[in-house]
Image 1 (cartoon, rainbow, N blue to C red):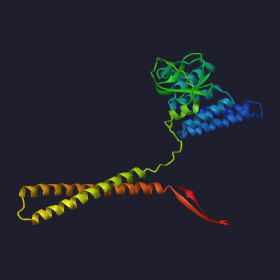
Image 2 (image 1 turned 90 degrees about the vertical axis):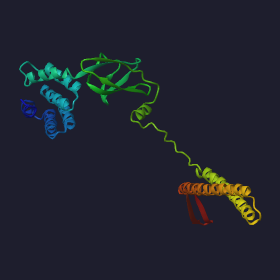
Image 3 (image 1 turned 135 degrees about the horizontal axis):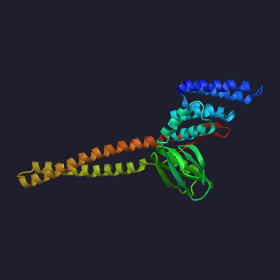
Length: 308
């Protein structure tokens, strides 16, 4: 029998049950409503919603046939550990002639190849254990935890506002030994670290980041003025030497080389000073935009305020 057909049978059992119950049995009627919602959600592919409704139906009016539907839905959600526990419970609460028994027995054999176990030890304190954010018990535990294969997140929330989390790889048929010692750290801090959001959110007072830039600009401008002045002086000397007669060729070549070097240095400093001035101007505008000035009138006259 397919699971869709089994849902119809399960629904019929719950709907028919109130007829055998005492008139006005509110629990059985409510359970039937939750079960039917679960069937609709399951058929629509909303397995998480269906699981909530099936569990509510079972909690409202416990019937073993609903465990079958819960286990099948957990199977669809790849929660192999949860499905195995539910299916084994179904077998324990039904007789040999129960519907789907052979199917469930075969499913259980498959599920046993898709789970592992985690033997968890802690520092002895009482801690709530979660696996993939789902409750799994409170320490000290009676034995190993049944866990679906694959990557899993195991977390502790202990007394004294302490917490611990570890990611593990669970292998089918094996028992993983895990020793977790919850540190003396606030749970909120650990959760922030788990979510990758442990950042310093303290407001930082903006600094005048443009001041060093203007200092560099000033130094470059001063150097440009000095080198430029020296260039003009040497150019004047070179012109005078060329106009004198007779002129010494070696002296002319030397002075010409010095003048050319100074001219090139002056050009480089000019470009650097211009670039520094641009950067300084940008940083100044960016900083000053964070300020504002408020001007208002009062009985005492004009009032000015703002951030500077």
